[in-house]
Image (tube, rainbow, N blue to C red; front, side, top):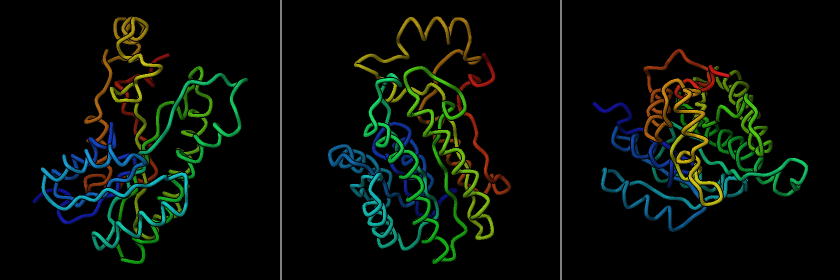
Length: 258
């Protein structure tokens, strides 16, 4: 029997990158998939690919920085699948910005997506789980930036740090309901977020010299979305039944170097 047979899994930001790789992995393992995102075109394309894996996947256009959108998405997912077993909070946003010239609106937009979005998704998904008597799992996709500084990204770093603390606090509060909450902290992963200003940072001499040749990343390469997805699936499975409030680095060892 496949690991997630007849389980229902929601993945925010599920049409691209780590989110899409995660949705595909859960689908191949028998899950009913609901992907949420802002782009109708990306959602439709991802949905067509997921349908090839079987089941009846659903795309719900959702701006997770809007509480009403999140509530609607959770309700639609519950109606479609009958229950919610796994909530993967993956959606994020990033852009380079100098701290002294950051605007309040853009700072808030990052926090509204990464922190408030995960808060609302976790809250409404957990309520659905408890109403249905589901001992479910919530997995937050954070970043090693949550506990390490990176230039030109104070908004993103601070938001990911807040997401890590949300992971720990909800893990504590939801444990009595049988809901496990954990996170993953990717490092350099080859996705669309690697392209900044039209340049893929993983193809620059800076990355190749500092992180590969000098082995600042001990495994001397960037990771793939599928490698992150496999850890997310592990945290949602019974194989991780005694893991609670953990945030697992998926970074090739980058966070152990300096």
